[in-house]
Structure formats: C-alpha cells, structure tokens
Figure 1 (cartoon, one colour):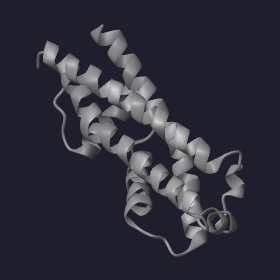
Figure 2 (cartoon, helix red, strand yellow):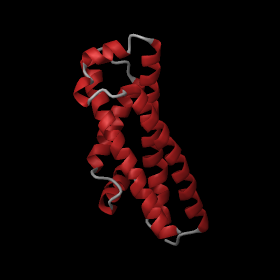
Figure 3 (cartoon, helix red, strand yellow):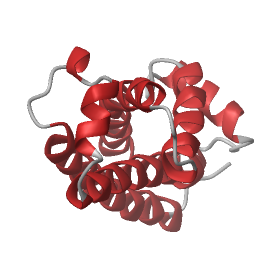
Figure 4 (cartoon, one colour):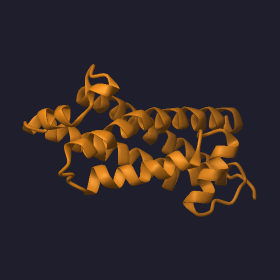
Length: 162
C-alpha cells in the first residue's frame, strides 16, 4: 500500500485535533480533581463534589472529553496513521493490537477498559458514589495513557512523514 500526500495530511489534521483534545482533557482533569490524591477520590469525595452544579458540570466535562479523545484516537487517528504507514487498518481491537506492537500504546487491554469506562462515565448516572469513585480513579490514571499514546503517535508521524 502506497502512502499518499492526502493520507499524511489527514494524519496531520487528526494530530492537531487530538493535541487540542489532549490539552482540554488534561485541563478539565486538573480542574475536576484539583490536588486531591488518588486515594482521596472516594465515595465521600464524589458525594461532596457532585453536591453542587459546578461539580456536576466538571464531571460531565471530564467524562465527555475522556470519551471524545479516546474515540478520536481509536476510531480516526490510529486507522489514518496505519494507512499512512502503508498498513491496512482493521477492526478497532486489531488496530489496538498493532498499536501495542508498534509501541504507540502500552496495552490494548487498557484501551478496552477505557472504552467501558467511557461508557460508564458518559452514558450512566451512577447511583453508588463508591462505584463512581472507582471509575473516576481508573479514568484519571488512564488519562495519562491517552496522553502518552498521542505523544508516541505524534513522534512516529514526525519521524516517518516529515
């Protein structure tokens, strides 16, 4: 498969988009969690945080941005990057396994966990504050994986398509 200028332009556009999504996600993460250590995100913290409209808005913003960046990376950037690299993209899980082999991500299984978390944070109103706290701790930690994957893909594109 031959790489075209159009393929490279598409990767560049998507990298620009994911860079903005990454900045926004990390920004809302900092505003939502503040300086609370991981172990401080518990059921009581969730109840307190969601007791006011600002906390609810920040939760919704964090969940939406977490899901949006993950969707863009998995559904758009990764297939475009594989295409530009001369590979044939496949199903999301196959692309994630390829991304793991190429060193873009640490573990494809983490990205499957991310997808489930995304669905829980975006589509469900959890009634158990402890379950919400657990999901938020996981999502908070996996935000770093999203950022690292973006950096790895950006670096790959810079070294292969510049």
